[in-house]
Length: 608
View 1 (tube, rainbow, N blue to C red):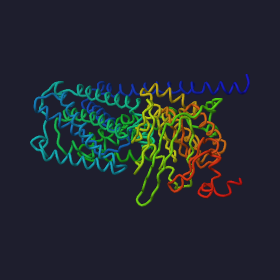
View 2: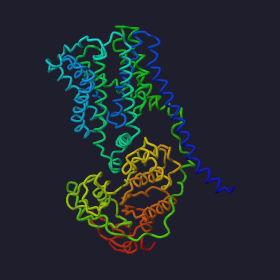
View 3: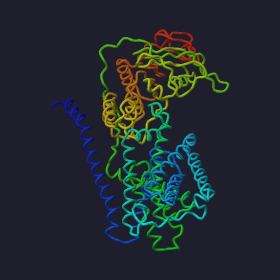
View 4: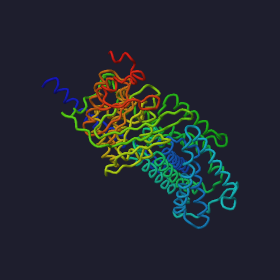
């Protein structure tokens, strides 16, 4: 066997070996999780001590609440510190209905419904805020709900609170023994874990993480970022309210300061942070670690332990931040080797992409019309009557000096920026001209784009990054994964599927962004300086890749400063200067235009 054939065999078997390794790791992880859950349920039954029962019921409650919070705070990256709003709504709804003679099994769903409405009403305006401002807004709303609970004394009991009628039995969730309460708490934990796992494993979970990592890139991939975050908040609020109803019945007494507590909100977020924020099982591990420590300390020290749990949480959080920045799940992942590292040798060059077709397809009909685009930023006239068209299977080069308005034009023809005047029309699949508005509208019509500053979803693997694009055409995870793998091999990224995107070189990241867009199966591809910052060898490979994409009938508009690429790729070139088109036509003719030489290329280029 020759050296070439041996290399080919090794390359072909590597993805299969990686897949087998992933399957074994997943199986081991599920076995470990099953043993942990079995221990949570079985240990208190075996010990048969009321205090131990209480500890494990509390573990289930806090793990369930933290898992629900993690859907918003972890997956979506919205740091909600007012999540006790929904827990309190569930608790009060259940208790108020119990006092009216309605079982809490119905009350928990009523509370969940109210919590969903409250979550959507609160979160929609708050999503306009970012970073600490969103967290502060949720704290403010939490205080509003606490004050409302104090004000409506006839309904909530005010500062006095409400007692739960001691009606014993499953119908009322009140028991003399602890085992039934453990069964209910454990069942709720399983429901929350099941929902969290289902979300993360399916399209919604990928969209949430993509929105958290790079909202602009997610929108370009057709993700309705506001919609998916509202969905996450609604699901999280419903689960929190249902757990809140049961916890209220378990405590047999509620009052505003406890049910709408900032300390409680921070506490449930803390479990996720310590266990591993954004992971499915992290909140469970955080609760399993912290709850027994604090509860045993309280039991041992009694009144002397007031406030001790806060001290314990603070110490553990500091240790985690210092030594386990990714939480307990970070250690688990490292131990299991669930994510491979890319060696410097692997990063040296991409796998060969799909070879080009022997002949170029002829240029077809118009697929995009840009008419009279005008854009002002204050007194600055960024674009001035920019008009051009794009034909099927054509590569249109867009060049010009820095500050000429190229990226502004790109943002307007992809829905990221509204034009002051003018319009952009795209030919739909059914042959009708449409005027899309949002990035989602453009994506639906088959317009995909990259960004001048590469925007990978750094916390995802290469495969998951491409899947975000593939979900646009393939809603089911299995189909999207298959399409992503096919696209990765076509783009020369097949060997890096299991690597985190953050481990790739700049050239690899640019190929990854193109692959993510190509997985959307676009008809129009907008490339914003995809060859900037890469070496000459990768530039040549990138040119061949772009030409192979063009040969499949995809139309391309490319902003480029690498003149080798512009001259090799473009069927037609547009030169933009000070927001105006100063030249348009064949690349060879355009570069000889005196206006172009003066504005962009420099006088020495003609003699090069």
